[in-house]
Length: 286
Image (cartoon, rainbow, N blue to C red):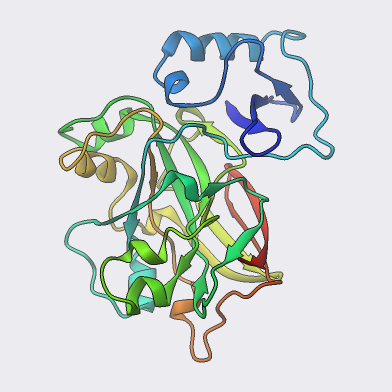
């Protein structure tokens, strides 16, 4: 299923994109697309049955209708740094022996076509297309990568916007360059795991002002999805509705020759993970 949330920010309602590409209203059968839904097999089965029954779910007119983040009430966002061989190479970093972790606050999440704000004083705002993993079952001390995949509810396209000066040159952890407002556009859809048979076979692309900047594949991940979930479960409990941003392929501004083409107000970024939907953001000053 392709689940999504539509409407004004803070007042989104649940919806579904059916097999014919028609937008369907789910608000009559579920309150939201969130961790409670993803953990409830009966509720998900009810949604699937409604989606397969003609006339049960009313159609929505998408014209002028904002698409919000596809997941509400996100618990935490755990991010994996330097998780692609080609991205590590372009930044001159060693291949990490274990996953590099940092966090994004849930309040960084915006819709896939919402405005992204360049922070005040920013000189090095950068782009990163990523595969987002959404947890559907509580994960603690998992024993295998297969167990990790079994705890995934679905996948989405994510934009891990980053301010490199804040992240790297201002001391402390990476978090200060990752948590500026609007720095995690998510969606348009949450695609359930049954529709993604191999999360290590997904092309990812990103364009800036129409120019292709990133063109990679999740096959290049150093730590694949199942292993990332297993690994994280030994350091923290993962709950339904938690999100994992799994890293970005080569092609970020930081990896380009000088002068590096960092983002500015007025730029337009488009990105996609194949099968998970496309995003488009116009940048403005904060």
